[in-house]
Image 1 (spheres, rainbow, N blue to C red):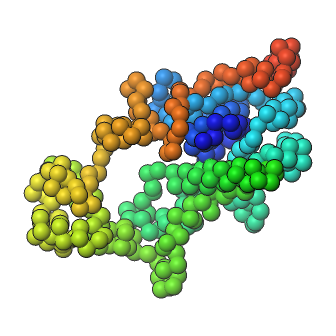
Image 2: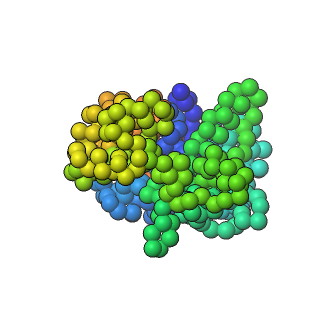
Image 3: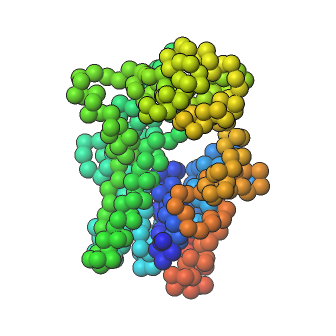
Length: 362
């Protein structure tokens, strides 16, 4: 779908790299610019796969890596030369950093009118919070979604996945796809302002209107789709494993009642402890009843494997980007493709050598 699209990714951590992971799966060529000497911090977050942090390996397969010191003026000059070959630039710096480095997006758009620039930041490029730092938990805490989670003695339970990071990645990827479509009609690129906090806010789009209309805060674990009704919840089984029950429609509710003899929470909890999890799945799998799987069970789930949503590489199992049109290879080594990418952009061997001697290129 995007086999003729070239993306230069200046971002780090998760939101930007996850955005370009989605697009790489759709066929785009993604070239990552990483910090000279250290690279993306997620390279060093355990556990490790062949010496590379799983957070990095999980969303950087099939990309190329260029090691540049963006504090060096020679490196910024190199970026300007590189951009003539790219359709999209993705960055994840705090507002004002690009401008301070000599990569002002407005100036870049004037120089490269067809360039699409996706700017991913915590609170957007404008507004009173634009310079505040933050991470996923901070953004989710602002949306009402964290307060709606089940509580422990220490407060609301933290989501086990990165909601804002991947929400912003999806938002940026879809915005880039739309901008590419628009460019085909107008010949013009554009600048996209993607906020992690606002991307997390999108997850409460169906809840916030009701909460505010009724002038009430959500009951943790007690809303209609968070465990507040018996036939939409999680139950323990005889073998200590758990089931998900999502019987929203009356026909599924009737089928569960016919099998268990009840649709009340206490009755269902009692009945489900009388058989192992997989036996209940066999009996009620067609009635919106499913297993709560461990990570190791997910890795062995044949429907995901058969459809190509998962792939194995050695001992590790990787998620494949949705809508993928090509197989992504392993994550690149830091600076593995520096010389190759520079050569493709017209840099001579002498120029590459000078950049390296100046400490701008790795």
